[in-house]
Length: 228
Image (cartoon, rainbow, N blue to C red; front, side, top):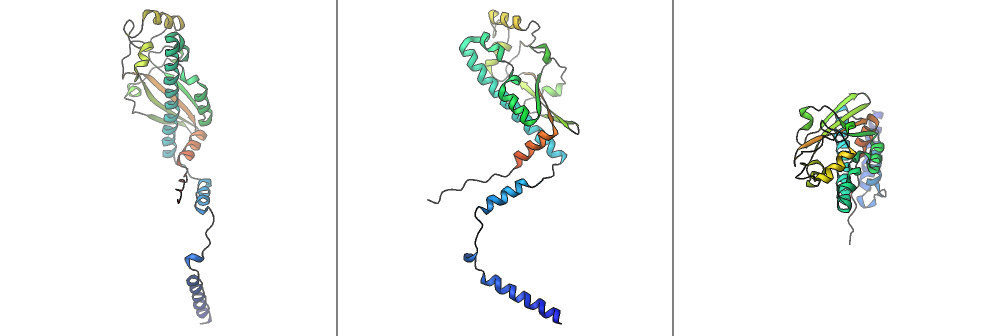
């Protein structure tokens, strides 16, 4: 009986405290929402195998899209400045400094592969599935520590026809002589707009993929709108 009385008394006291504590009397923690978001981001999250595959696609897209944009920017600049002779040494986006920086951040190695390459070092036998439309992404887990990403490289800019189009039509005889001098075993001509020329192939380490997943899923605070 005494135990029941003490429990009832405690409940009544707590109820009085809650009633007495009006909303206008509650002292809110400064930047409480921001602190809560930070703590949530710092919490260790379990990353499932399906999450790692999704992150592999995200990372591969981010890396190769950046490389493609940089290639277009550089080639446009070089072609305008000095034609094919000036642009030819720069048609290697996997060697660009900014691409190398992303590779190190993601713990990745990006390579371009083709059955008809300009540089024989890029020669590879590709399956038909590797060369499907550019919406296709092929991701896989090689082992516990490594993932692969593939997507087609499509000739989607008329700019590229100046080096990879039809000889005598898109490529002048003079320009092709320059190409053959630099790449005697060149096979990368005769392409048309919209045609797949090869693939981007990226190998990524698990640690880099997991870190990229964490970055992509981290909650960001929206900036507050000014009151006035």
